[in-house]
Amino acid sequence: MDLTAAVTGVFKEAYLVGGALRDALLGRPFKDIDVAVPPSPDFEARVRRLAARLGAAAFPLDEENQVWRLTQRAAPRAQVDIMPFVGGSLASDLKRRDFTVNALALRLAPGVRIAARAKTGDFAFKPARAAVIDLAGGLKDLAAKKLRPVTPAIFTEDPVRLMRAYRLAAGLGFDLTPEAVRGIKKHAALVAKPAQERVREELMRLLESPDSHAWLGLMHKHGLLTALFPELAAQERCATGYYGKGGVLTHTLRVVERADELYRDLPAWLPAWKKAGDLLPPARLLRFAALLHDIAKPPKAAMVKGRLRFFGHEEFGAVMAGKEMERLRFSRDEIRLVCAVIGAHLRPGNLAANDSISDRAMFRFFRAMGQYTVPLLALSWADHASYVTAEQLRRMRKRLQAPPAPLPAGLPYNSPKKTLRYMQVLNQLFNVYVKKSLKLGAERLVDGNDVIKTLKIKEGPRIGELLEKVQLLQFEGKVKTRDQALKALKGMK
Image (cartoon, rainbow, N blue to C red; front, side):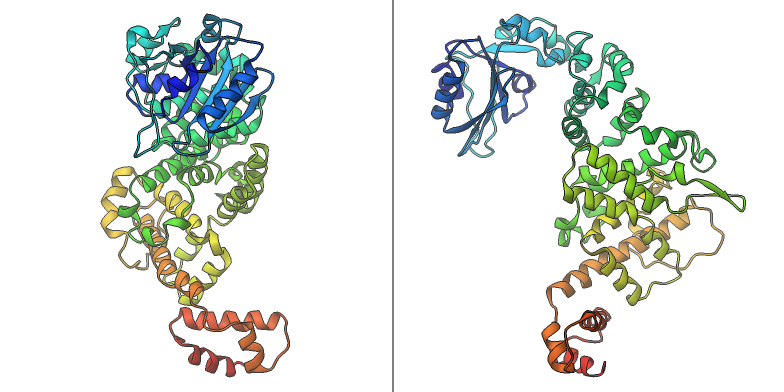
């Protein structure tokens, strides 16, 4: 499919604009395409003709500004957003865009062939730089890897651009210019004004960065992180005696950093991850959970017998995180997952505090957490790993799979020995879950009907209790066959 021929067959004057042109100039493949055309009274009719040519569904994305989205029904499944010039001319349109590297245009003409790559389905082509229309210095900023606002007004015109600045900089590997930073600092509070699902989308795309912690730290430095999550502001002044300068917030960002490290090299940190990889949450969702996991420490901070404690911060934190996620219009499933792991993020550490962990204790832990077991262990891994330096963590890597040994009493919370032991327990829990619990769920030896027939009892809560006892015996390796399970049932009268 020659996209240029399809578009120019309907719109005699049309321009490739925005991220597709930017990425093409950077030599990066792209999937989504933005096209700007002169205004016309029959614009909608032409859009529908173009959709027919492309074999695409068409619907208005923004009726007020006449933005239409065309999505192909078959490969390469291109997505084309098309709209008339904002302000009536190409020059006014480009001057209303967000950053100079996005304020570029290339007229679609026969020599500009944009075709999908067969293997990947995305697009790639090499634009002639001399043919690029650049009214704001975008080509220079592209070469310098700088993200510069087209005008100082971009953040007040659309405050979502406050978040987009970091998302784009992270994705492109660009630096924010001083003009961008000044605008963000001045207008950070406006991030609460636009539709929050748009803000969420920019945040979650930022959290796809393998170095998301660095960008969150920069957002905090510029005042945007606490404008987005005001509850995090109190963390900076809380528990500075424990965590040093920046208090709980320093710890929070370090936990996100460890989550970045975990996902950067999963096979090295969790060798069994391939057997349970589909149970791990998307990296961006775990990073989000890490960002909010201690959100309730400041309101729950209290001195108890001379020690600063945070009793109940995990359960209260789950409630607070849930409210934030509802505000940002997360899905129900995402809210349930994040709240479940935040509300239980101390449980693995409580298990690790014991000299040894019985099969029964592990079974009950896995049963209680269910589908959230692996996400919880991943968050706990990042949490505990934050108490040692990155270099210490790398030196520990070969020992993390070793059996955990009891620790002497009285070690400080940030002792490397304590951290190593706790992370060995986390790896033990992860490995046992993959080896036993997943298999247990797939190989149930008896069911409720078997209980009723074997013990001749009526339906009721007792059946679930008996099945759980059989599952525990199976987990412990004391029951391996159906006959053994039925025999064990008979002994439970």
